[in-house]
Length: 104
Image (cartoon, rainbow, N blue to C red):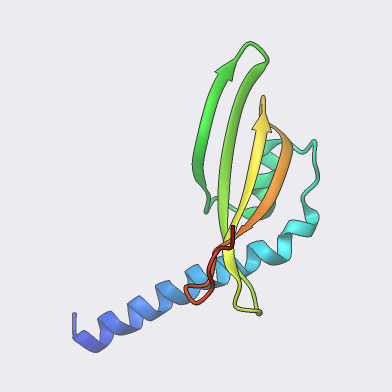
């Protein structure tokens, strides 16, 4: 494949990945506590990472994350927690800009 063809393919892949993270930001308003994991994934898509899982006497727990980016140049992750495949918690975690320092 010619170098220009590789660049076109790479740009297309990056654009689609970027669109997916913007899509998440727009779809989160459809997510509600109590939804099944299957329903959440049908709304947000399969582009998530499993970031934790455990089994306790209270049930099985799983935490997944979806990357996001928005028009304000914010980036980060939505973290969603499931107990027995039911959404029990979610939150938004923003990446810190390299030019900003975390204050204690």
